[in-house]
Image (tube, rainbow, N blue to C red):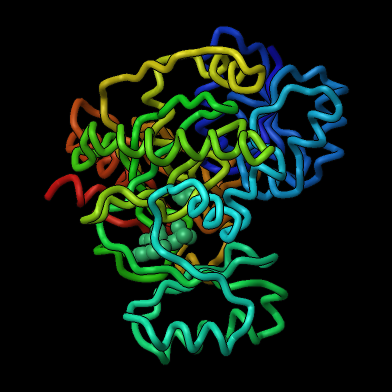
Length: 414
Ligand code: AMP
Ligand code: GLY
């Protein structure tokens, strides 16, 4: 089978890696791909939102399966365009991807179908939002929901911070037209529960945990994720069963009921609160960096799973017992401004899985080319062994412009 993977990060590198373990795969293309996957996939220079060019490439090259990595491609309807051309593609339609792209859609769906999440209210008026927040306890959770998606979540500790954030989000023109969702503040360990979903069918993956803050001790700004690991010792089988039967399965059923059945990976960003498991957010795709610690543990042939989801068939998932723990090497300055083009050496000595998140190759040299640059995933019989392997390998990588967290997995080692 010829397969196309859309995306260029560590997540897509891990998908390419999993595909290359399948005997059914003859050739892998990645658009646009990156320097790390070039050994396993032919990189094609088409951007992830250039959906017509992607479709034409798939038609011309007789691609039998396309797998979508990033949300940006889903949000512009890559799945709809491929399906209209009768191409097999793994991922949700634009309508189904609203579970991620619109916080209000997700929140209203959860309210309608009794999915456990924090209480919320949506606002378009700055004055109304401010008065509402002023009458409630702090911290206040403020989430911008509009075209400039991704800008944000603010956890405001007092009225001054909340007021500044609300002004930014609702009065400042550069955010564009949008809403703000104000939520109750929840506490407890967070975890990522990704499931393969095809209409009513839900196949749960192993659990993982991301580390969103830039620095040790969960300090510093939010990032795309600085490390992850799997499995999670502090989430019990009962917690997972509860999350499946009270969150992921009912959401899959609700999407069918609402006329936009979900196909692809439904990602529950969940929190184990003192009142039980609750939803923080949904994503309509594989998480990054969670995918890079979960897919290496997958024993089953991933092509069978992708095809079962896309064709509405059946499959089952088997997992390895070993643990994985990954550490991100990011450019100094990330998630704010950072330099590119610093040479990286020592990669050949790394024994862990090494996923490229933002690199490029120039005349045989590997250079930094993004905020998150490399992801080093150790494995072992225990999380402790996996961590030791990852930390050992991180030390082998030479580059003068990278930093990493040294406490990935700390919640598992308490
Ligand atoms: P989100 O983009 O919705 O995943 O939010 C980013 C981060 O903000 C989450 O990973 C949580 O750490 C935090 N967060 C979001 N919503 C809440 C909430 N209702 N209560 C507490 N923390 C939250
Ligand atoms: N790691 C969080 C995400 O993929 O959104």
